[in-house]
Image (cartoon, rainbow, N blue to C red; front, side):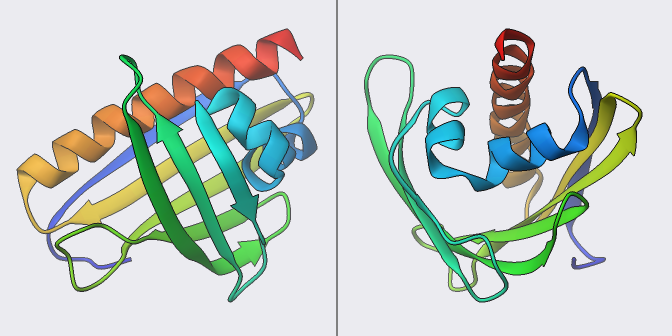
Length: 138
């Protein structure tokens, strides 16, 4: 992660064991269910790629893609996302820590502007809300 710029970290404790949280982020069918995404393809390994079509409220479809730079099963997932208009992909780090039958998740990103950070933080909160609901129903 870059140490310059505008960053955020969201941390939550999820009522699910770490392996279920990991599977939610790395198995395409699981991810599609809780992240409001369709056409999800995931190859969760260093150098692997991912793609999906995010369906936001109102029905707008946004194609997304990126890659995996670091993958440590049940512990760390560093994903890149290709953002239109940016030369470099945006990195997102997802850190997991087992706490018995619960999991602490930390999601962090760094951006060039406060506006980009605020928009991404809002999107990440939306993702974590979806993940929390998915794990509660599982």
